[in-house]
Image 1 (cartoon, rainbow, N blue to C red):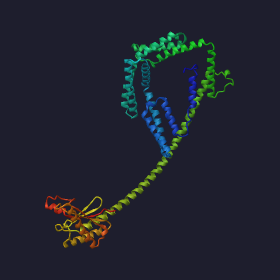
Image 2 (cartoon, helix red, strand yellow):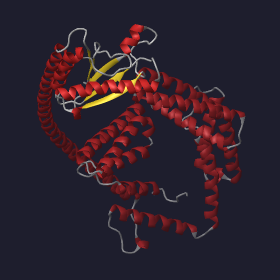
Image 3 (cartoon, helix red, strand yellow):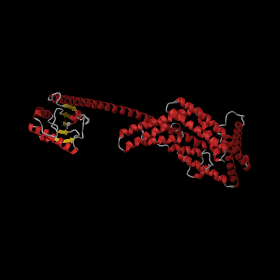
Image 4 (cartoon, rainbow, N blue to C red):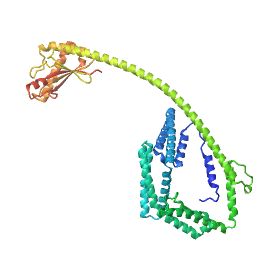
Amino acid sequence: MRNQSVLLPLFALISLLLALPALSGAQSIDSVQQEMDAFKASGDHDLAPQTLLRAEQYLGAARLAAEQQKNEDKLAALKIASEKMAEARLTASDFRKQNQDLLSLRDDAVESVQMVSAAEQSAGEFSSQQLLNEANQSFNLAILSRERGDLSKSQQQIGQAQQLYTRALDASLPRLSELAASAIGSAASSGAKRYAPVIYQTAKDKLAELRAYIDGINDSPPSRPGEALKLGREAKWLTGQVKLLRKNSGSHEEMLLKSRDFSLRMAGVLGLKTTDHPLLFDMSNRDLLTAAAKLKQDVAAERKAHQLEIEALKIQFEEDLQARLLAQTDELKQSQKNQLSDMKDAFRAKLERETYEKKRQDKLRSLFKKDEADILINLDGSLLVRLTSLQFASAKSKLETKYYDMLSRLKNALQIYSDRNVRIEGHTDDSGGIKPNQILSLKRAESVREFLIAAGVDGARLKALGYGEVRPIASNAFPQGRAMNRRIDIVIGAPK
């Protein structure tokens, strides 16, 4: 909607200043969110997108910590979010200062291509849109490279974006010139030269600048080339409004009363003294502008005071954080000291266990002669005593008396490991049937178990098993292999 009074932008400014949220004494989730929203509203957020994204992520972490009532985590995340916001603003500000020409060129190219796109589609317009898309890609890559610290690549992308935006603008300007000429001609036909002479002449001047560049008379394109089309349309619209006012004899008073009412509302917003009767109110624009400027200064001063307060609170927060970190460091050192002591105790106990176990294993080995048994230590701590010298007559399970001495020493070995259970496993070769071999191996294991029980070993610790021929340790194709498979294995279980 168009405004009759020139004071409307001023009113919008004052309303915006008064609507600014008061800065709290300390950074809060809401205050950081307000900073973030203001940054996005400024239009600079696309100059630091990754930094802004990290700020949003930390702010989200602060919200989650607040929901979980983890105050320290919330404050830490909130501090980083605030720092990232400051970094995003600084990054965007620096980029804008260093690349103002590029940003102006981008704005001109985008506006021109969009204006042409809103008109009839054409091959030239499609080409300019393609170039604009490529330019935007290079521009975004320049921003990302800068945020990552790759300044060389950023400058390279900036140069490429500059060229592509220039090409996109050049491709759209001929069509834009045609649209502007048509709009200005339409305004002239409606009487703009008489009823809106200032805007009409300005539109013609902008069109002349545009054509001078297209024709090669000027080397540089005019700034804001889209204004030629906008002003042409504005001249026609204003001409129509002036004609309506001229037809309505009472419209002049109405227009002045509307302007006075607007000034009255503006004075109320600014806190100025007004008359009791609205129709008698009269205050100059100079007074209103002076009051607005003072309000702006007051808001700026208040902002600065709050910012100083925030900085002081940040320093206090840093000191408190440092104190907490020192306390946590001392606590961590003590914890590490305790852990080290526990590790030493555990290592000492482990060493003692291993020493004790080594002595038991050595004592176990000392009980048997070289060819009587093989002793193996398994990873789980269990032991296998393979009685290699113990042999039975074919198809028999009776123990021969010549083995009694060795089995008595086996009894002594089991007493060394009196805290563990024992399995006595019988095995055969593959001669004969599977079932008979299994039964024979079990009987042989039971013969050994009965001997050990008779020698004084607790029978509850002993379990006899017969596996027959299913667990060979050598090939049954040769006599020597079959002899190795006919065996008794004593398995002393793993420690509990």
